[in-house]
Image (cartoon, rainbow, N blue to C red; front, side, top):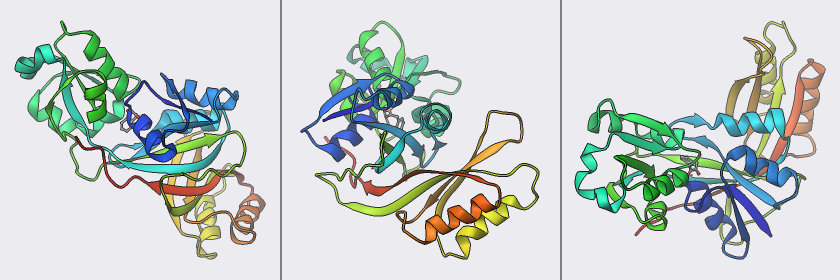
Length: 289
Ligand SMILES: O=C(O)C(=O)Cc1ccccc1
């Protein structure tokens, strides 16, 4: 079985893949989220794993938008992983790490460490990489540059970097959600982890110019006692003020309640699409030395 992920090796996504699928898979690293999503849509891999949301920084818009606008796929599982960010430099620069002029990482990793970066290197330049692993790889290949990467401990090992500051994320509760994607509505149960929640994710568009439409949408869930764990709006990309909503419900699709809510929303003139009904897994501990 082939599993694609946001690479290169030792990204947080790679760690989530290893914790969820174990070792009996063929890992295929892709350098961008769209490449990874395209690969599973085109059948080059059986599943793709991509980040969807971080507890400090919010949604990974690139993933959400690509799934909605470009490549409709099913979410067949979710992995929530703790995230620890470390500052690392090339070993040749360990003694002078405080003189770095550039920090390189995934935009979410940089955003998770803003307070640290502001206090430690006021005014430093940020450069965005496609992933934390790609940033670590770059720093490894450029010992002559005064640049540090923000990445995880495994990336420091993988790319031979020295961690000069551990745990630089600004808030202790730092977790990221990853979606497991597949073209069909298929179950895949982790051989290593036990699921701890059930979820369904819907994408909803509202009828145009109807006052109170969002209120009516929410009440379709409320009176059925369907617990929502997330509601988020994203631009439709058709004009200012046009949004779609992503809603997470705290249960798998059943035969009555969720189909009933969907039928009610459709009767109101909403567009509704089920993005997935799946098990959510948590990785309890981050990697340690
Ligand atoms: O860049 C990575 O390592 C990823 O897997 C994406 C990401 C970035 C920051 C926090 C969690 C996941």
